[in-house]
Length: 79
Picture (cartoon, rainbow, N blue to C red):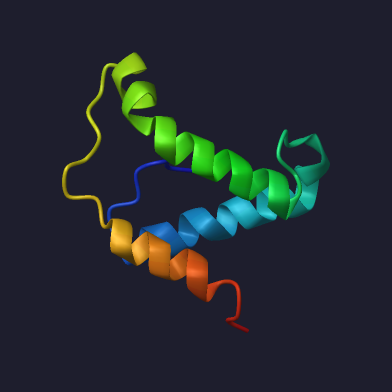
């Protein structure tokens, strides 16, 4: 599972793989409830500058934060 999707299609594939992983062994995840997952997502996005620095990398300056916010919001109601 690539952590660097370079297109919408690759992001879809990444998300499908992540979902399959959760279905197969989500009970092994540290954050295996929606509440825990969202709490960890908030914490990671907040701390991401440090996470990138620790890995010797820089946050992508052209990340599409609006697209991801819209996708996360849409997932609360999309069928």
